[in-house]
Length: 212
Image 1 (cartoon, rainbow, N blue to C red):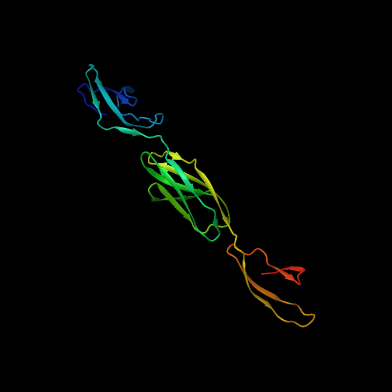
Image 2: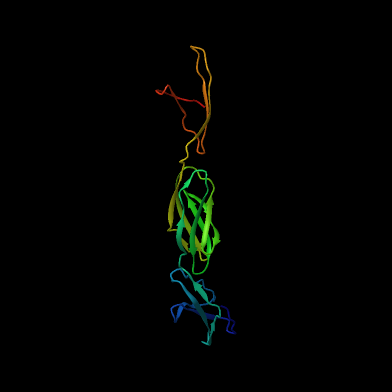
């Protein structure tokens, strides 16, 4: 607010209309400037303000602002978090539905402590694709913010990456040898998640651990 008067000193009473009636929020202020804290109010639209200016001889006038504000303390709605178990070597698309009474600012996917920004896919559905995660269990949490910085972080999920494919073993090489010489056996073994051990079974009874 701001006004001028020949008496030079002007007192301001600033009022808000949040609950349907005018309520003073500051009285006898000489600056005409007030920072209004809306954190204690619930969501609503059309909040109006007016200012009464009074000089030293008690002449006064009201100014009602044509501008109105909206108060939003409602967190975004977060539903339908989808995260399927996958086979190792594949990618995993994770989707979630996020909506807000005003608009969504950002959606963050936390995977085992690492944050990824989700993108709007279609409608209210956001997605992020994890490319070839390693074998293990993964915990998820979605952080959804609206344009008023209201946060919903209550939705969690999980998925597992499994390796159910047997290793590929090929190229077995065994050479004939003379008596009392060492027998060298070679074989190739590959697997998407790595080879742990290779065991050579000899004569259907004895096992030997092969070296890389």
